Length: 246
Image 1 (cartoon, one colour):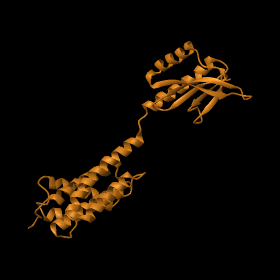
Image 2 (cartoon, one colour):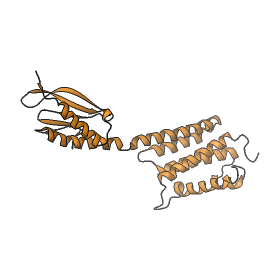
Image 3 (spheres, rainbow, N blue to C red):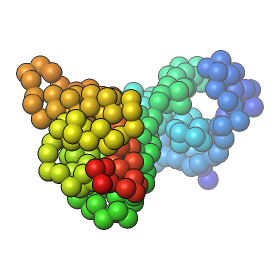
Image 4 (tube, rainbow, N blue to C red):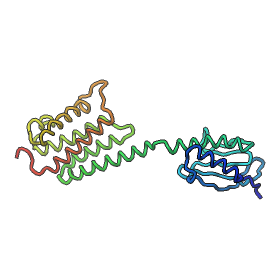
């Protein structure tokens, strides 16, 4: 039979006090018991506390305490002769729980941004494909794929997005001039005074995506802004029924 080495009610109350002191929600912790072996094959029934949201665990052994995570490893066991020593390790563990809970999930934010961005692009792509502009739709997908890479290809995103806009504008105008020339040649391509803003977008994209300068590279925010603007402009032209100049 395993030796009963579980914590007493008073000892568990000490643990509760430390949880409250760390400003953690005590209802997110649960107690259980398990049988472990400690040296010479002797078995003990011990108390185990688990933080449910993080799945972090502490096992209060007879002469040791096991933390997950520990100081250096995912699971680490420490020799602890008394309950006071175990509480020292518990304090460290609770601080890890607190840090884990309050840390931002940067990867989740990145995924959410990517999903939102791709959703917007797909809506524009749908409009482009309905207007039989598959090449422009492909360029927009490439632009968003470049933004979603780790690390992102910011220059590539700009190049693909402006290529998509130029492609749609050329077909819309039945004119193979550059986008900058089309904006000057067809003054009703975009509503005024927004056309001046689109011309600025073209100039910025040419500087950042085509005619690169040493030391002048786009930021992630700038690249995302340009891809978003190009996407909106592509969708606008794809839905514009009557081509300009006709």
